[in-house]
Length: 228
Image 1 (cartoon, one colour):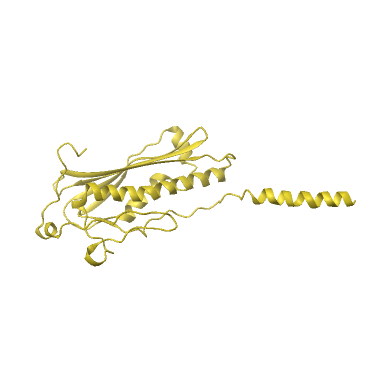
Image 2 (spheres, rainbow, N blue to C red):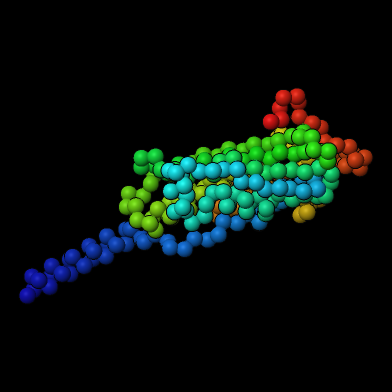
């Protein structure tokens, strides 16, 4: 009897230790939201958001398991961050790729978006493009909850990078189409987007030439052959 009791006392802590080392995956996931980041205000009257991505069968099967699909989160980010200030002209935010795939024991995600700007007469004069690709190891125990958690983490990581990359590319290629942000501080400089929790960081948005806004001058067009 003593031996049986002693054996039970030893096995129980070992079993508890094994359970503690592998916590259960979450079954609910927070909505990925980027409204807390500074808006990117463009000198246009309207901004259209378009999803042109059509996943293949393999990607579609993986995307269906994701709690937050990349295309849906990209659309949400564009609605929350891209703002039109009412000036003549228009912009179109296009989702070119928003894929999640499994390649062997690796989950691979890729996002490509572009922002096309047109004058009031419909002439395309500028664009910015941003591409992000991340990968993570697929869960060894591919239960539905563990796979969903891995895909959620991959999508969140890609969106952190996309927020930085898109803002950088807009600042680099479309500086003349940037207007003051509604929450700009002294001198019109936009606060640096940064989240200690999510690690999002980018340079401040540049301040456009005030003279061009006063005279109604159109932003400079891209060099010939640059627009697509």
